[in-house]
Image (cartoon, rainbow, N blue to C red; front, side):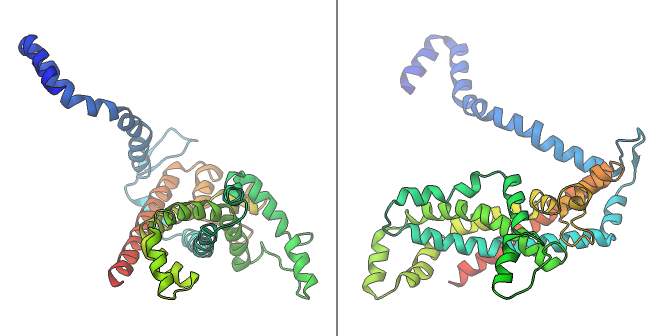
Length: 317
């Protein structure tokens, strides 16, 4: 095929040969160019523009955009509400992500066994993820209701008292973490299941002959073999957890109470803090942009720490 093309270019003269070479070398870049064009328009440009806005006092209520340099970042880092929102976000992230990924790993391990209606159980794992975030948040807000919630009814039946889940930091974080874990556990379980099915069966047979139980096979055979997949789910779950918005906002009942994360800001996350300044307090887009870039830096830092931690575990084993 290459010889024929060269022959055609030769018969067409130098111009034909030039067209052939351009087609051979430039075509692959033209095929992938639409993605990079769209990414530049809808990804890079908004990032760059947000960085520019973050260095100004930029309000939608005024045409004056005063350059303040890193003034917004200085104000941000000295605001106790920002550090409160960061602490709440990290707390909810840990409470939701760690149990979620452990449960997903165990569910995926169970789904590798010979079960009746195996396809049904695997499809059922995706049902929580298909449900709308709003629907999940509304339902769980009712379940964790103080006066008529099912969770408090069960606690009273067991002899414990009612809990005002919204009032405290720990209780509200647990309630929000349960929402997140319920929605994403099945999704991560299917990712782990796909990775487990790629593990050679001979490895499990050898472990079985050595007397390893199923749980020992899971933690000493399966987990090391699917470690790259675990790294992927940890990083993706971390990114999602640091951007959590709908669950705490709806858990607070929406409105101002939802934006501030409760009367004492006990469950206000970084995204709620950003929304409060960008849309609820004078449309301070300059300050909100500084919050967005600080969030970006936190996400990159946490993802990098996750990667280095798991890499160290890998090298130790």
